[in-house]
Amino acid sequence: MFTEAEGKSLLSAFGIDTPRGIEIAVGQMISDDIREPLVVKAISSTLVHKSDAGGVRVGVRRDEIDEVAARMGEQLAAAGHRLDGLLVEEMVPSGHEVIVGAVRAPGLGWTVMVGLGGVLVEVFEDVAFGLAPLANEQILDMLHELRGMKVLDGARGGEKADIPALVTLISRLAGPNGLLQSLPDDVIEIDLNPVIVSGTRAVAVDARFVVG
Ligand code: ADP
Ligand code: MG
Image: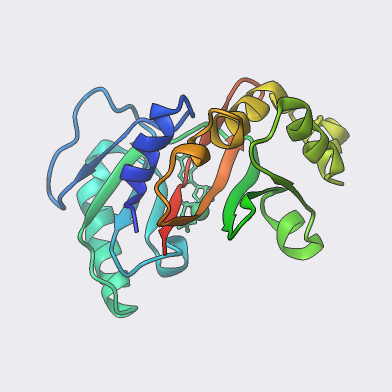
C-alpha cells in the first residue's frame, strides 16, 4: 500500500492536481506556505476509510491542529487503530464530488470507472466504465453516460463543473501516456475518491493505491 501522500505525489508527477499538503508527526508545525482552511487526515497503516473512524477533519485552523490530532488519536485508538502521523493539506473549495477508479483486469489492462460521488454512486450506482488507454472523446462519452451528467453541467442552478479539467485529469491517469500505463505490475487498483470538480479546477483530494 502507498501512503496517501506518496500516491498524491505520483499523481502530481503526471500533472494531476492535488491539494498542497505535508506529512507531519503529531506535535510538529507546518510550514507557512500551506494556507488555511486546512484538512487534517490521519496517517495509519491499518486505516482504509479514514472518515469512518474519525480520521478526517475539514476546516481546521493552523492553531487547532494539535487539538484536532489529540481528539483524532483518541477516536482512532477506540477503533483499534494507531495514529502514525498527520497529513495536513489545504482545503479545496467545494465543488462536485466525482469518483475515478481503476482496476487491473488480468489480460485486459486497466478497467476505468467514473461516477458521481455521494448518494448518486451509492444509491443509484450511476457509473460508467471504459478500458485504458482512453482517448479524450471516450472519456467524454463515459461522462455523458452518467445520468448525473446534468448535475455536473449545472442543472437546477448548481455550479457548472469544469468538464475539460475533469477530462484532462482522467486522461493524465488513463490516457495513452497516463499514469496507469507506467505503474508497476503489483499495483492492482487505484481510487481517487473524491475528485472535487469546481467551475475552474478538478482536484484529486483522496488517493488510494492498492498493491496486490
Ligand atoms: P476517506 O478515507 O474517508 O475517503 P477522504 O480523504 O476522502 O477520506 O476525506 C473525506 C472527505 O473529506 C472527502 O470525501 C471530501 O469531501 C473531504 N476532503 C478531504 N480532503 C479534502 C480537501 N483537501 N479539501 C476539501 N475537502 C476534502
Ligand atoms: Mg475518500
